[in-house]
Length: 182
Image 1 (cartoon, rainbow, N blue to C red):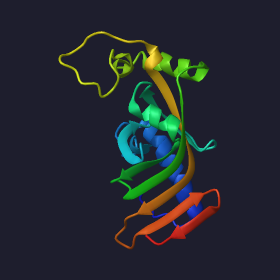
Image 2 (image 1 turned 60 degrees about the horizontal axis):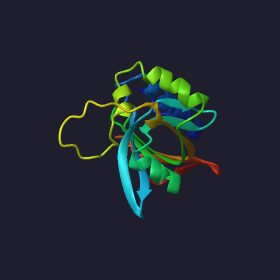
Image 3 (image 1 turned 135 degrees about the vertical axis):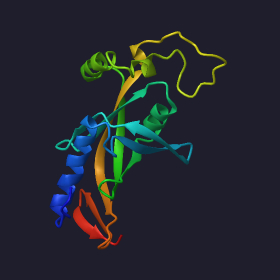
């Protein structure tokens, strides 16, 4: 984007357009987002890969190993924050989300059918859960049962633009849109 957007409506549309572009463009700055959940009263952050965006449903999708700590955190506290920084746009998006993890059903099966043909299939077939210490490389494989689809329903977008002509910030949520002090 070369032209600076002037209206809240245009900025919100652009945020969703850029998130959707990140799904298909491996070089997009927002393809990898930070996800912060709560673990026993402490923040726990990690990177996730954006796999799908549905602006109408206001949702984002990423995948996870069902055995990973983040799934238990999501089940105990589904409210989370996702964060992206685009160096190209000089934009930060902070997304307040509600997470839901699923490991069965038609949607999970159809997504697994695509994942099992990709190099990332090994991430979900590992014999040991993510973060488990290993003494040596273990070639054993697990099964699809470890694959989970996580949907993040976006309640609010907090957008920040860093710009030489002045920084700007806005919020888009259920109460409407508003300009904020950066």
